[in-house]
Figure 1 (cartoon, helix red, strand yellow):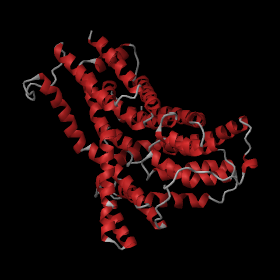
Figure 2 (figure 1 turned 60 degrees about the horizontal axis):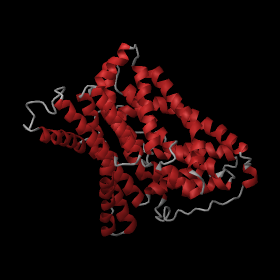
Figure 3 (figure 1 turned 90 degrees about the vertical axis):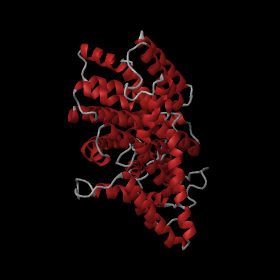
Figure 4 (figure 1 turned 180 degrees about the vertical axis):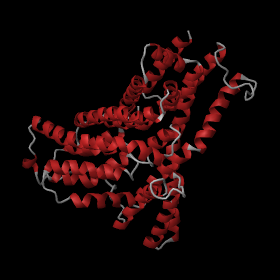
Length: 458
């Protein structure tokens, strides 16, 4: 009976998310409903007797409060610091300077499809330091897109490449990577160096080759010849993305946190540790000093800190609150016994950790396509992985790594993802045309990730 109730609630959750109801409210209410039924049926107390308030309704919200307190003060602060840093770097023009510097060396390449794949690799490199997929997409659309169009590259091919530059969320400063590391009981640098990079490098090779051949195939099928379109200029409707004229050396600022975390780790200096938050805050204050030198205005330099704080606040609701509500929902599924029942069924059928990883990856991938968000899909279901991994006796990271990669890959093939819609709007093409161009490279990347994860870590 309780499992039938869980299935019904899951169905309602999926329906509500598809219909674009607020996912935080949906997950929170669904979690409370399941907790209440588990308590009413005598399956599981809402809180342990020594922690109970003495009243079931208060206990429900006390569970919510406990998760909120734990996540907001730890992982939530980390993610907010990353978002604030990204906003500040854009505010002072450092992100724009980084993209300009990265794009400049490839501007003189004359081969259209060679330019295409080199631009993809340059974009992936920049994605290490620009954590927003939409922000990076817009920056590349006003810098790299005109260069590709001038070489005759079709709008669909150019957008297909740009949309996928943030498809893997590489590095210790990406929100999903930080969350995956935390759930795996690893620090973000260890997660990146010991696990993520071993899959990312082969995935990049596969995706680069697929971009070259797939975009050329699609262009030929559409009767598009880049040679006949050389010299064309991109007409961009996007205004203001390039308005901040920062000096070229500002390009170094977004790189500082990544460099600090790499240097002060087991790779170079193991005796000194630096956290994500400290590296971000330190760089923001370095940026304020640079702004003081550049503008010669203490008021302007100090005012820039507001953009950092605003960026922190803007991510609290969409990401941090989503993490809390998703964890409440996951805990309710554990309390009513749904996860245990699923694991016992899989164990009884002789299905191993590899099969369960595929199930979780499919769940994340489908949610990312439907929701148009890599963060929302991954944060909603990633908390289920540690218990599943423990049941099968494998490290949690072996399940979380492909799940994390699947979430951002799924966003890259979603026609309602913000980055897809933004790029399609600027290029004046259909989002579905972009999805056609990203589907094969992203499919190859996901297959590569699953194969290598199984070979290396399971």
